[in-house]
Image (cartoon, rainbow, N blue to C red):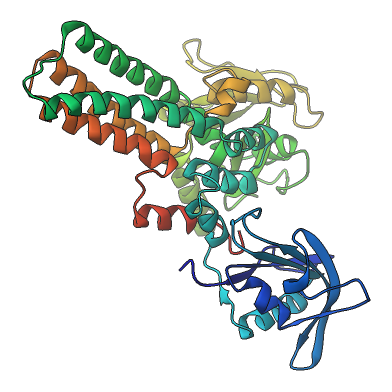
Length: 456
């Protein structure tokens, strides 16, 4: 695969000022030569140009001018993939970019697979797997906190700590295997204690990393928060206030919202996916019933519920039923319409934080945002945490490594044969190596890089 020269459009499809087409591989400069016509005395063919220079000219296909472009020449190894690369900046729009790409493919390039440029950067040792995943996190960041965490990981902060952990485990494994090779020499008691201390410290370090998993997941994918309640309590108005714009239709007529509406908002640096649901009530309307069925499905999947009440109306039997139904979920009780005379009285034993708001004036919305953040963010946001926030793949590998390391400690303390001790420690070391790609399989690489967009 690395013998091929690949090409792809690296900018989003659609109309725009510019589009960029990437070319990478051993034949990148030659392929670009075949379709690039320099314009002006100082512009050169790619093979004749110095590295990290920009050439002005035209892309030509069968004697016909395709587009006027700027062509960047990037020679290995100081490139994103550590291969020869060419980046062509053409006019934006579907047709110009597609015609430039088609011309490169006709001249011998192959269409890149999703994430193949970053995969080549990994395979050539420019980045490890945690940094490759950080590229995807960077692209998909929806808040400044998520962006900061991705940048820290891309800078190699997490990789550095994982490499240090693995190096310690490799040293311990080497020490144990040395005694396997020379069975007549028993491990001295003080040496055994040193090995146990190393392994215990490794488990403690894994525990610290594992504690960042939940926050890392929240930053990367966000949290789903369902807005629920009876019709006309102000659910759609609350969504609009949280988003800062009119997204949902607001009407005094009951049952206006017939389907779920999803939108993502930045709440104190955290991506929260708000879902406005159909009002919960008894109804004979088939469309409204379907809307309520979808609301129930949304409630099942939501990690947080904003249960909205009309503060100007007394509690109804339906309200009491819903309070009991949603009790097992993480929830915030939102009392809306506090600008009107209050008639709502909630149960004293309600085990949920409550916030008073007015969706007409916006009163209380900032307090609600604070409550949402406190509800979903268990830790304290700090620079050190942002440096090492692990994802679900890292979490799985660390959990396997931790379990195998604990078995190693127990086997060593129980004076089991060193072969059994080394077996579990080898499993732990390999699991830690998976995180940075030291022991990655082809299936794992395909799974990671297939999630990238084409051209990255």
